[in-house]
Image 1 (cartoon, protein in one colour):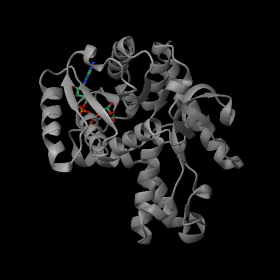
Image 2 (cartoon, helix red, strand yellow):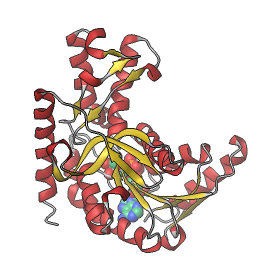
Image 3 (cartoon, protein in one colour):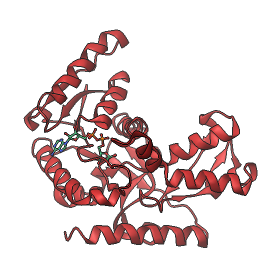
Image 4 (tube, helix red, strand yellow):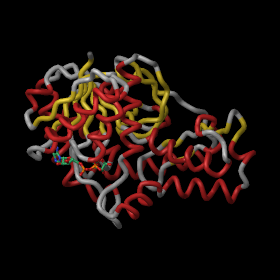
Length: 307
Ligand code: APR
């Protein structure tokens, strides 16, 4: 069985383990700095396996030696947002945590592929690539599946159709200036702009932009974790099963969409080697401008890292 390490056994890390073990895709190692937390959650999850009929093994640890030989390392370690905080407010604390997580994990799993979740996402993914020295194929950030899923959920609710019929593509940086491509989004092939009145579509776009904040405001003591972890599990599955799955994710750009030197949300193809391809849409002027604005914001924050 493949091996997936999840760094950070908090809400998102443990729930990612839950989704992955249920699908029997890999043995899971949960790592955390807190003593007892990864061990306790892993044991609890391991005790659920007979009930759901999965032979995936789950192990919790504070020692990276136990993560050796991982096919994928998912980094969720970090501080979540509190009400009123932006993702960028987490920069200083989470930079230190992500750097340490990547260095320690890579030392014992030199062939691994990293999937980064910790916020501010695009900046932490950049940091992970620089710290690891890995090619862009092996460091990918999770944001676009989540942002797109939020929009899909809102459209499905509004129209009373199955979520499976709703296809939305949200690109750009993972922040309030993300870029929902409404022109490319559709319900069973019919463009969203033809089905929803402008005011309704605008409201959904706005709710998608603020989707993370809406949940932070409700939970008060943490940020979203069910949808983020489902997105992580989908990315890990696409890689482990070599699915060549096209999903929006944060990738290092080398000229695609007119951008270089940043991680940014774009459609990517995922397979066993990690990032196989970046898909480029034809954008109109308004979409291109919105992407540039979002890219400028990500670039500004990346520059503060001084790497
Ligand atoms: N090494 C390993 N684990 C760490 C480290 C570290 N250096 N520092 C913190 N952690 C662990 C914490 O002990 C905690 O168990 O990371 C876990 C984070 O879990 P939660 O606090 O439940 O946060 P979660 O909701 O999972 O969000 C994690 O994802 O959405 C982003 O912005 C969010 O960066 C945050 C991350």
